[in-house]
Length: 91
Length: 187
Image (cartoon, each protein chain N blue to C red):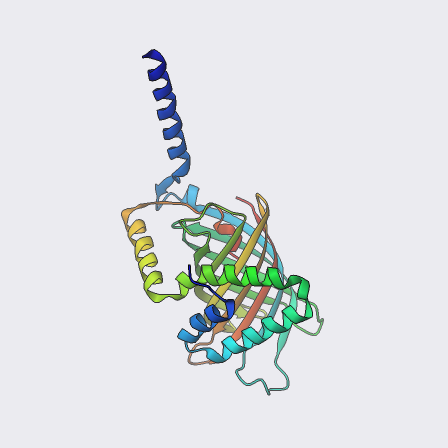
């Protein structure tokens, strides 16, 4: 397993989408928050890692395209599962 | 021999039971009774006119609370559509009340198909937005949003959502929306 760093992952993901300036701003904000609240640094790292790992497949066009194609094929088949918790994010 | 048969039967039954629990119930795409969900949310709402130039001294800002009934249709475990109408009451008495209607698609980022069901959810989406003071026709555009939610009760969830609304070519002014509050499943 490669040694991931949050800074490296954010730079890679956001940099690939041409928003390098935003990446630096996000990293600067994270650094400031962690310095202001050192007790929360570990939690912030965990949360950032979670968000990055969950959003990576969404931000990768190939993976996203394949996922959407799978969803479309399921729907075309006429029978699919239901997300009972869809109401939570319909806000 | 009899003991072996009984053990094998129990093992098979347990295996089938586990398998049936692991599989999601499947319904027809048009089975609206299983796919439709009705909810009401109430939240802190902030809207602002988006500008790339931070030097603009005064950006029109609206802050208040809103209440929003919503109808959701779940097409798939990862994809749903919803229509939500929100009426907002301002904190500042000088501001008008606002109305907002959204019709959008939601794509579930978390939990995905490989993850077990959890109390947390993360979704991104895109749709149409109508927004105004006395009507919903003052501003019409499209919006993209990211939403995080956490279930605190089988029918109640905390949520926060950020939405960026894109103005049409005839009125190229973008808006930002931030909502954070509670949503409650009615049906």
